[in-house]
Amino acid sequence: MSLIGKEIQEFNLNAYDPKTESFVNITDQDFRGKWNVLMFYPADFTFVCPTELEDLQEQYALLQELGVEVYSASTDTHFVHKAWHDHSEAISKLTFKMLADRSTVFSKQFDILDEKTGLAQRGTFIIDPDGIIQAAEINADGIGRDASALIDKIKAAQFVRKNPGQVCPAKWKETGETLTPGLDLVGKI
Image 1 (tube, one colour):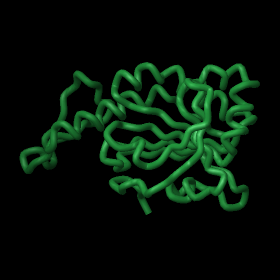
Image 2 (spheres, rainbow, N blue to C red; image 1 turned 120 degrees about the horizontal axis):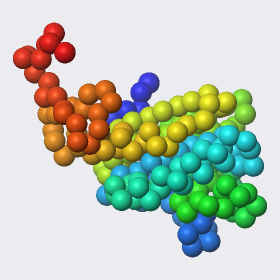
Image 3 (cartoon, rainbow, N blue to C red; image 1 turned 180 degrees about the vertical axis):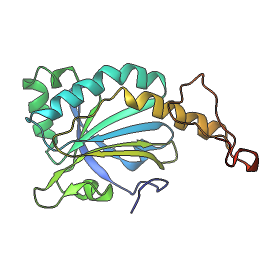
Image 4 (spheres, one colour; image 1 turned 90 degrees about the vertical axis):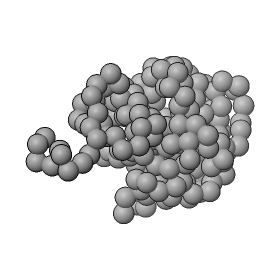
């Protein structure tokens, strides 16, 4: 079952906030009124995960300019997130909040929990200001993600939201042409 077009469910999670070096509480209400990127990863103190989160941090300033908040999430505790932040060169660079899904309820809501291991899969979700999932990417454990690919997806999602009736074709860039679906285009693309 696809999560695209579905509203996020209620949640309430502990998190580590590297900006304030404190533990905070994040709920579904924190996702309202702005664009959000939610990046699940299997576990702290692993191998591919720090490379992905460091890559996401490298895009964080640009995402913030686009009005996007970023959250990472795993089934580790917020205490483990802090310890990882304190001891990993890559993770010490993070400034976005790290959500703790110890109960695995949050991972189940996004249908990315590996029931055998109790770990989240590599899932990335773009969520609009109404809490609606607009894009999803899920990768196998050994396949890392490229956070720069999020920029064009978010710009396209923001454009479509502001311009109902228009769509963005493949490889669309912010200054590129869009399409207005209609009978006149059938069989002509």
